[in-house]
Image (cartoon, rainbow, N blue to C red):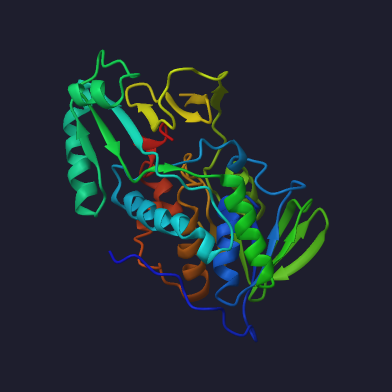
Length: 339
């Protein structure tokens, strides 16, 4: 796949479609900006009184290329490039730092990780195999007991979800988008050529609705009579007092066997783990299993392309078709436990 470069400056609106984006987290914000820069008339509807107050603001804020699903690897490549160029393209700093992801692999998963590395490298991703001796030398703060190897992605990293979300929204507003807080969507009714969207602050008529409501996306879909099996999943996140003696910053370290992860945040550590028929013109951008922050740029580009032209922006979106739930397991099932 050839990664898509940013599209040219937005065209004159004229008969541009009016798109309501439900949710002002990072995914909704990225979609709003991507649509607005291509000339769409955009209204963002957020139930809270500020942006990034839901799962975006609670994210571990990591971005990794080390996935077993090829489509996720491609989303990550695109998104990493966009976050690296964020200041030039969007106008503010997204805080993206390539501190790396370090996966600690048990013996029972050694063969699978070797296969995944081969696929990732074929997609142009830098990924390093570390022996236990390499782990002891390069990350002496990690015990190797019970491990077979480690996998390190030097181009993986962390970002600032709040800064990225606010940057996207500010840039979208500069292009004419409206952002309405305190506007929970309470009703969706089809109309000729589009939708009537009822909110806590009033009603508006639009051509398309993009459901980027995160854990609430299932409830928003139900307002339109659509079934989207997206539910909230509780994740525990903790922060320590300052920890002396660690070389900072650390990579984001993940224990593959348990899903426990940690990374440095200044002189502290963040750590956590996871507890173990479509309507036309209604689009869903939710259910990322914790990957929404890192894949927001690619999602924004892909959704804008699909809404405005019916295309896919160079991404294969078939693994994420909501219709898959009728006959198969979700595409991200095996990776939903890992940030």
